[in-house]
Length: 120
Image 1 (cartoon, rainbow, N blue to C red):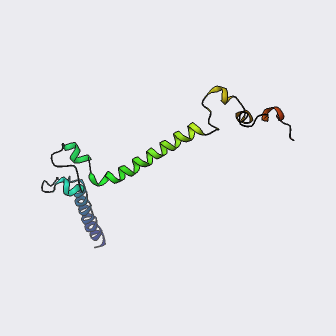
Image 2: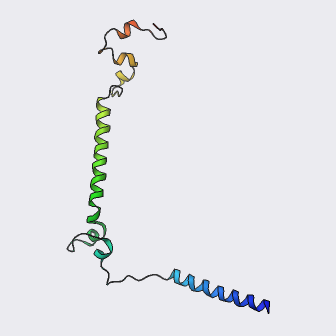
Image 3: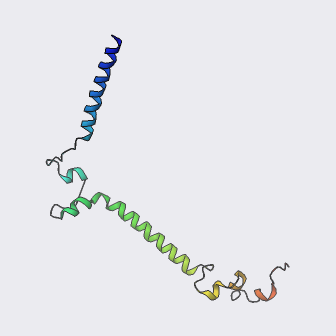
Protein backbone atom coordinates (compact mmCIF):
# COMPACT_ATOMS: atom_id res chain seq x y z
CA UNK A 1 0.00 0.00 0.00
CA UNK A 2 2.15 2.84 1.27
CA UNK A 3 5.39 1.53 -0.21
CA UNK A 4 3.92 1.13 -3.73
CA UNK A 5 2.59 4.73 -3.61
CA UNK A 6 6.07 6.08 -2.92
CA UNK A 7 7.54 4.03 -5.75
CA UNK A 8 4.97 5.43 -8.19
CA UNK A 9 5.76 8.99 -7.07
CA UNK A 10 9.51 8.37 -7.43
CA UNK A 11 9.03 6.91 -10.90
CA UNK A 12 6.80 9.79 -11.97
CA UNK A 13 9.22 12.37 -10.54
CA UNK A 14 12.17 10.70 -12.28
CA UNK A 15 10.29 10.77 -15.60
CA UNK A 16 9.46 14.46 -15.18
CA UNK A 17 13.08 15.34 -14.33
CA UNK A 18 14.38 13.28 -17.26
CA UNK A 19 12.01 15.05 -19.65
CA UNK A 20 12.98 18.48 -18.28
CA UNK A 21 16.67 17.69 -18.65
CA UNK A 22 16.19 16.57 -22.25
CA UNK A 23 14.29 19.79 -23.04
CA UNK A 24 17.05 21.89 -21.45
CA UNK A 25 19.77 20.12 -23.40
CA UNK A 26 17.99 20.33 -26.73
CA UNK A 27 19.74 22.85 -28.99
CA UNK A 28 17.46 25.38 -30.63
CA UNK A 29 17.79 25.51 -34.38
CA UNK A 30 17.96 28.97 -35.99
CA UNK A 31 14.86 30.12 -37.82
CA UNK A 32 15.85 31.34 -41.30
CA UNK A 33 12.55 33.20 -41.65
CA UNK A 34 13.63 35.75 -39.03
CA UNK A 35 16.10 38.25 -40.46
CA UNK A 36 18.96 39.86 -38.54
CA UNK A 37 17.42 43.30 -39.12
CA UNK A 38 14.22 42.20 -37.37
CA UNK A 39 16.18 40.72 -34.47
CA UNK A 40 18.84 43.42 -34.07
CA UNK A 41 16.87 46.62 -34.39
CA UNK A 42 18.74 48.51 -37.17
CA UNK A 43 21.87 46.91 -38.41
CA UNK A 44 24.10 47.98 -41.26
CA UNK A 45 22.83 48.23 -44.82
CA UNK A 46 22.01 45.00 -46.60
CA UNK A 47 24.91 45.39 -49.05
CA UNK A 48 27.50 45.44 -46.24
CA UNK A 49 29.64 42.49 -45.22
CA UNK A 50 28.39 39.86 -42.82
CA UNK A 51 30.63 41.30 -40.08
CA UNK A 52 29.07 44.76 -40.51
CA UNK A 53 25.57 43.31 -40.49
CA UNK A 54 26.25 41.51 -37.21
CA UNK A 55 28.30 44.10 -35.29
CA UNK A 56 27.39 47.58 -36.55
CA UNK A 57 24.07 48.75 -35.15
CA UNK A 58 22.79 52.21 -36.00
CA UNK A 59 20.78 52.51 -32.81
CA UNK A 60 24.05 52.43 -30.80
CA UNK A 61 25.62 55.45 -32.57
CA UNK A 62 24.30 58.04 -30.03
CA UNK A 63 25.73 56.07 -27.09
CA UNK A 64 29.11 55.69 -28.79
CA UNK A 65 29.11 59.42 -29.60
CA UNK A 66 28.33 60.47 -26.01
CA UNK A 67 30.95 58.10 -24.54
CA UNK A 68 33.52 59.33 -27.10
CA UNK A 69 32.86 62.98 -26.22
CA UNK A 70 33.22 62.13 -22.50
CA UNK A 71 36.53 60.35 -23.05
CA UNK A 72 37.85 63.26 -25.13
CA UNK A 73 36.79 65.79 -22.48
CA UNK A 74 38.45 63.78 -19.70
CA UNK A 75 41.66 63.48 -21.72
CA UNK A 76 41.66 67.21 -22.49
CA UNK A 77 41.07 68.12 -18.83
CA UNK A 78 43.81 65.79 -17.61
CA UNK A 79 46.30 67.14 -20.15
CA UNK A 80 45.41 70.76 -19.40
CA UNK A 81 45.75 70.41 -15.62
CA UNK A 82 48.93 68.37 -15.84
CA UNK A 83 50.49 70.97 -18.15
CA UNK A 84 49.60 74.20 -16.32
CA UNK A 85 49.04 73.31 -12.65
CA UNK A 86 51.82 74.80 -10.48
CA UNK A 87 52.22 71.69 -8.33
CA UNK A 88 52.91 69.41 -11.31
CA UNK A 89 56.64 69.39 -11.98
CA UNK A 90 58.02 67.85 -15.16
CA UNK A 91 61.77 68.16 -14.58
CA UNK A 92 64.10 66.88 -11.86
CA UNK A 93 65.37 70.33 -10.90
CA UNK A 94 61.94 71.58 -9.88
CA UNK A 95 60.99 68.26 -8.25
CA UNK A 96 63.92 68.56 -5.83
CA UNK A 97 62.85 72.04 -4.62
CA UNK A 98 60.53 72.66 -1.72
CA UNK A 99 57.12 74.24 -2.18
CA UNK A 100 58.39 77.63 -0.96
CA UNK A 101 61.11 77.55 -3.62
CA UNK A 102 58.54 76.93 -6.37
CA UNK A 103 57.04 80.35 -5.74
CA UNK A 104 60.28 82.28 -5.15
CA UNK A 105 60.16 83.82 -8.63
CA UNK A 106 56.59 84.95 -8.04
CA UNK A 107 57.21 86.22 -4.48
CA UNK A 108 60.89 87.33 -4.21
CA UNK A 109 62.53 87.03 -0.82
CA UNK A 110 60.33 84.20 0.40
CA UNK A 111 63.19 81.74 0.85
CA UNK A 112 65.55 84.29 2.41
CA UNK A 113 63.18 85.28 5.22
CA UNK A 114 62.05 81.81 6.26
CA UNK A 115 64.10 78.97 7.61
CA UNK A 116 62.86 75.42 8.12
CA UNK A 117 61.44 74.88 11.61
CA UNK A 118 61.33 78.60 12.52
CA UNK A 119 57.98 80.26 13.05
CA UNK A 120 57.45 84.02 12.85
